[in-house]
Image (spheres, rainbow, N blue to C red):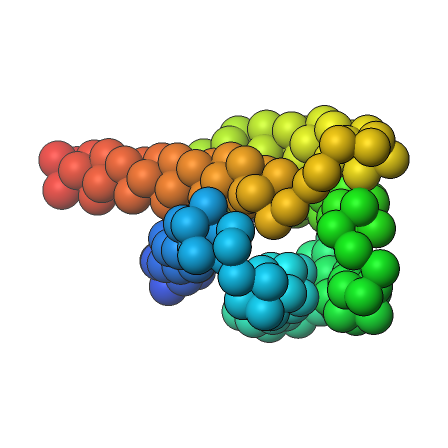
Length: 193
């Protein structure tokens, strides 16, 4: 069984960089969603397709850094679901935001489950995965909330998806910081030994 110290430094460094990158992209997406995309339908449409497409790409790259999609089943499933979501959103754009929000709701539930499973799997090797596990669980709740809004009559927009992305950004940042602190403590113990 692997322990936290079994993960090689380049692997730990990659995961930390990956989490910081996921935070930055999500934070930019949220900022645009709450500002210019709220009143710019063309930009909103691009962003709605780009968000799950980016998630698919990020999962693909990360899985490849960790042995490939075949070795990382939860990330492979997340990759597939995210690709299908991007395609479904692109095809559904003419039907309006209620239909798109339904797709995002289903995607949030599924991708949250796969993220939770990835966090549990990585805990043994890297530690500091509690935020990814919590984020995965909360993603399921956010998906159910989006789906309930999508079937309602109230107007919806990209701003109804932005809080979900904001929480994702927050959790990626906390995960990156946790790994950074964990790494600093490990190095400090190695120097003292």
